[in-house]
Image (tube, rainbow, N blue to C red; front, side, top):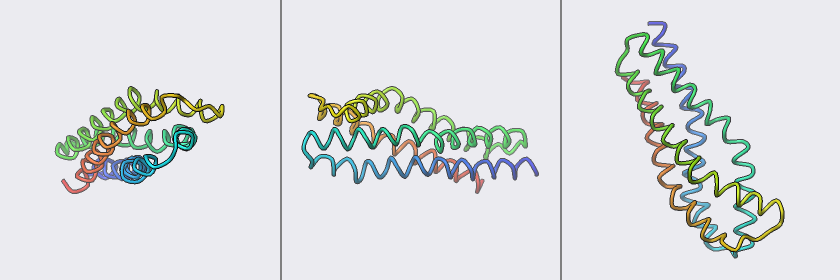
Length: 158
């Protein structure tokens, strides 16, 4: 019984960390992406570059908290033989790892290019194409984070 409670506390911590990343991705998909479509190329490069500069420095903390706590929740629930909770937390872990793969393979390289250009006051000739590539993945990232968040919430009710 005690392990189950610890698993639930870990799930709550995972929910808090994951919710920060989920909320950020949803905001980017619903607000930032269409807003940036209406600015000129220089503004796009500067704003996107500095948004990613701060995001890439600050967002790993809640993201890591979410993943580590989700793993802890899955392990603790499994040790408690609370299989439904363990499976739900395990699904969340898999989804968070899928999100991490999408981010590191698609978004992060674009973020680095936009950040470097913004910090150096440069306008990339392919800034619109880079942003379009970034835009193509943000909705998927938000959906994956949302599903992980739902799976983590499910651990609290099963």
